[in-house]
Length: 200
Image 1 (tube, rainbow, N blue to C red):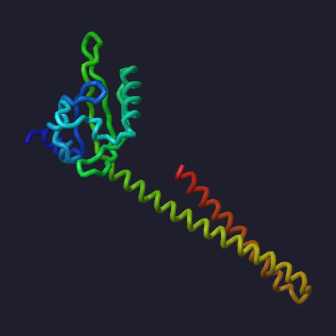
Image 2 (cartoon, rainbow, N blue to C red):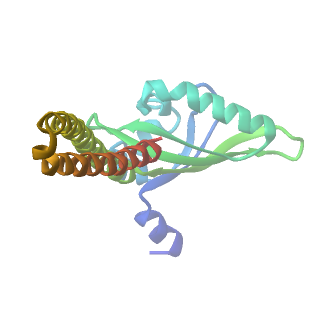
Image 3 (tube, rainbow, N blue to C red):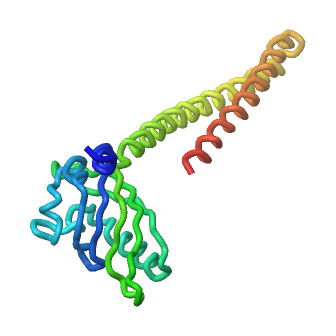
């Protein structure tokens, strides 16, 4: 096995060369398209059984057209993320890096690049986001409890005032409850704000 074949065999994706047409008609593809996404390259090359855009998530195709079009106007490379539908039906997030190839006269010959499976990265992000949502929910529960504690402290202060000298100890307790509630609420709000910034 030569170096190139070895590297391509370990790649979680594939290399491609295609036309700059409506279907991004594939001219060449490495076998990662079948190994990772379940489609034989021969089915897609030349649009024999399906077009490349037909295996993309349909809502992502217009974005691809826009990004590729802008890059070609500037003769720049592009990098974008979108979804490919696996042959079994589920969607897989990928990142594509590509560019145009021109002849000496400046005519666009074809597009080429790489498409890599990044679904595991998105799964880790989703898991982290889920953990953050749980933390945010717990923080809101804490804030609700603290509001109730502050209300109890206010009521305790009122009762202590009514009791006069006999309620002095109760008044100290009410003051401590207010201080605890206020300081805890500040900490909880800081956590909640940090969560919002992290999610944003």
